[in-house]
Image (tube, chains in turn blue, orange):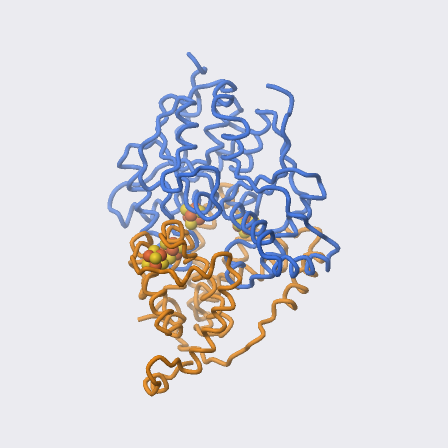
Length: 299
Length: 227
Ligand code: SF4
Ligand code: SF4
Ligand code: SF4
Ligand code: SF4
């Protein structure tokens, strides 16, 4: 692998320290394998998520901006935010601060209370987009040590990453970046029509019947298409899809159990990372052990 | 809030006083949304409703929300379950042919509804947001265990709350077993700094207008709102 060419600031987000810890482990492993720098923002705080944004506007932008300010101090690097919700909130904060001078003034004033200031230059990036655009699928394929042959993924993009802040793909109805990536690495991907349909997010907590309906639809479709796993880009999507499978199987009257992975886990396998470093022990719906042992790439 | 009798005695084309006040507050919020003014251009095509994954569970569809606003009836929107059923998935906003920021408009309506205390105190979405905000204000990071514990306790009566909490125990234990839940919160070092930012921002934000409003019901849960 070439010497590090690119360095990124890293905003893990609260979920990656708890429910989504496998995402944190596998993301770090992938970046390390590719020789990319990932510098965690020192003492970052919760971005506030949509829950905060819908209640107190100025406050939510101000606490989110603290992270941008702290990152700036550490150097002018793009900020990688793997949780779709953090990605959305940070990207929205940056854009609103750039487009709304009145809000900017208020946030600057709030930050000044802590002797911070923020230029808001650094871009907010989702790791999938970084890997596909900055590294490139061809490069990733060249760096692969193993083949994902035999895997058949349903690539699930969810909503927060694809829609509101327009990530890299012009097609917000049917993105293909993850599909293209895994196909290049030897896996098959199913033609998953619900790939950007919402899983319900926090509705699973506040309005469970609706949350279960939406998630059941996603699982049902993936199982019917013969997927061996659903691959996600967000800790909350992963959580909703994985942790309610018993309940959903019971209400659907058909077995809807299916492993749900973070895209960095199979990617890490392909790049030859040690499976033990990719957080598979945190799966509640286990991944069959033999599927972790892959054939050499190109064999 | 708008008494029905008041509304029925209005001259055609006139809005009742309370509706004018709500409208004022809403339009102030709309102004702050980049592109918010496109609201005028709704052609009532229903694309938003057709694209919404949860419109089946709403009492007013997203299209109707826009229609009611234009007909001068924010009051009924604020009392609907629609604003709380929205999952913020942005499908409507992405597809709207007139570029209307429906999701952000629903956020604005949520804020107005909360500012005015229109919903029951133990309404799930409020309690969740509030539990989340408290956790973040105190620790600087979210602590799911503490937040959810509070949520399950507070969304109902104390006794039922305990039952609710116990029903969540298997999920929690499962997460624990897989190393995915913390028993204790993690506090950031710069918590004082963060709290200073929050305090200052709260000062700046304090709503200018404050209008008295009685909660519509003391019932709890989703049954407490909408029709
Ligand atoms: S979006 Fe969620 S995970 Fe990300 S920082 Fe905010 S609360 Fe934490
Ligand atoms: S799919 Fe669900 S968890 Fe994922 S971003 Fe959308 S609402 Fe959030
Ligand atoms: S999609 Fe847009 S234009 Fe069509 S009804 Fe909804 S808000 Fe109006
Ligand atoms: S953002 Fe809300 S209203 Fe719009 S489609 Fe999604 S759930 Fe429906």
